[in-house]
Image (cartoon, rainbow, N blue to C red; front, side):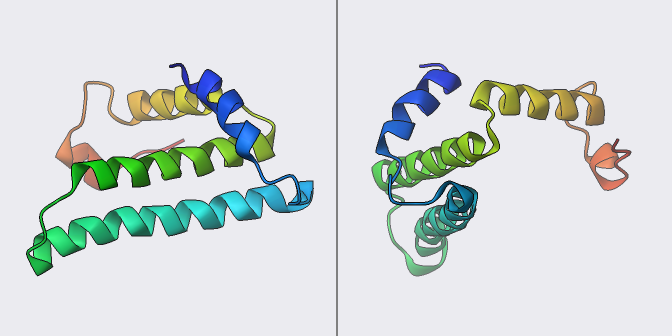
Length: 109
């Protein structure tokens, strides 16, 4: 599935009671919350002896994707555009692939 197709399908589940001005706020708060839930699964695995449940982690990452799509929607953009912007930024930052030395002394825009 293409990112923009996902975004269109996912937005069918946008809460219609959220005012337009609050959609971005809901999206960014949701991103933080769902990222935290994904991180918590890893924390429990690394420090509490839990098995890493790949299915649960995938579900949390799916929730992250949903809120990312909502944020893009709130900005009036599509995920394909946002993803391409990110690739362009990374190619500029690391033209020959990741380099630890370049990551320490980044020369961004």
